[in-house]
Image 1 (cartoon, protein in one colour):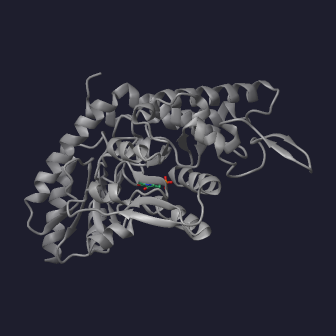
Image 2 (cartoon, protein in one colour):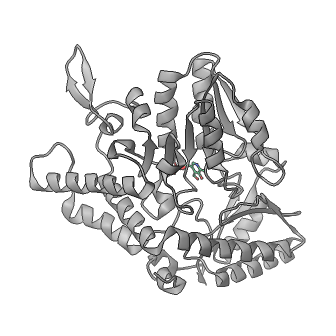
Length: 406
Ligand code: PLP
């Protein structure tokens, strides 16, 4: 398929609107992506016609919804290259996926004095569940440091792993700096010491082609809303062998085989980890989003977004008032920066009034802000529907902001 950004933009109704009378420039894709019409229609059609609970109904609609949901699981399995649908667990999103692993893997495998490794650039969702687990089990949280460019110190990482290390949990791509972490190497090093690895794929899934079997990661977590699907649906991929050994995370309907007051036996994978009514509409819309992406081609997306990154970076580097935070050699289409002498919140507020949606603050990654001695940044993050023209509008607006404050 040839990449025609103007044609693609027509798929996203949110891009047609104006804010404060200005054309919307949406540069907050790392927070959440816009949704194409096919995804919105899929969700709406489920509730219009197919609405029914799954796995427990004898009637037509329930059986149709169950088949559609399980077909979606199959599609997602293929999209990320998992070996079996047993390895695809539906969750609310990355946060819940990581909490599931921290809680369940933690219950089974973490003991007093064990060690868990995360990195300095993690989102809070990949820090706090491990921190709470460490408190509960009297385990130790160890942190891979980040250098001045925003890259993980791989030598330090190697030295952090000991015979007590029980799991490594790192981001595929940093939401705060845009750094693409060398996850192949990270997994290889951990596996050499028989340590499983969880990849927080919240930012990775929409920008990189992911094949969990080739990566050989033990867990991969992502959120639908960051890959053009609705909010409230996400996925945890886990290796079947590990998931089988792990106890249930939540309990209730769907996740059981037999229940009596004396004893309950649990359902097989993946249902063991899916207590309660699932987000069926969200699952079907996620399938639609992944099909939409696949049709454009994730490699095509990646190279177009890289063009946007290079174009925007060059312009920002030309502005002496701007300091880019995170200059990793391998970066995704996201730029975090500060304007010397201007608070990020003030700048973000003016940009908003000019029709430009950016993110300001610590991006739920306070430790990496502390590492760089700042309390927050302005962040622009691109998706494949963004354009160089939008970057030009943004740069002009930024010049206006700088003139106002300096
Ligand atoms: N991890 C990373 C790297 C993220 O960027 C985010 C969200 O911004 C999350 C985890 C949490 O994702 P969610 O809020 O969809 O659960």
